[in-house]
Length: 206
Picture: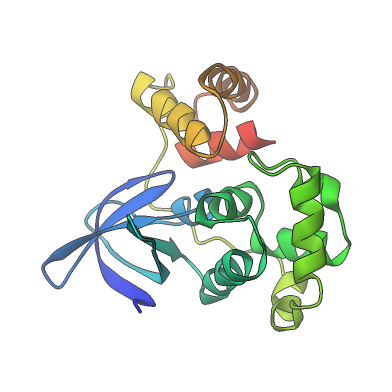
């Protein structure tokens, strides 16, 4: 089982990173909350990972904090009907501290705002996880502190490529194309041009 990968960041999008380690390039799926903490391309990066194997595929999921990786594992192993894609969507919508607080407070409405998660799925997440969060309690009480990302967002106009990256990321998280375009357009109006792609997506997610 691959539980950690450390190497040079080759390329990153809001939901993925390619990391070169030991002469091998690894494609790692990540939540937006991890993407916004990545360094610039060419710099060293370390992610805590979980490999997921299926009959017809294999995928590697990466997280900035070990605790985030452990929460992801808990979700996909203990919540019936919730796979890696939905778990990544959930962790892109909210930081871990907010997720733990929402589950502990049985706030299904907040969880249900995540693309791909309806009210019934949100309630199932709460029922199946609320008694399994002891190891995360201390983490939930602390605010999420994100390191300052060294890359700088565009300060002029929001480029077409970045806009398209943001739209595609929302589609990956479960939005329809028209819904994604509308959400991103609204987020650009609110956030302005001087914002990173990851911040734009988080604004679109609300």
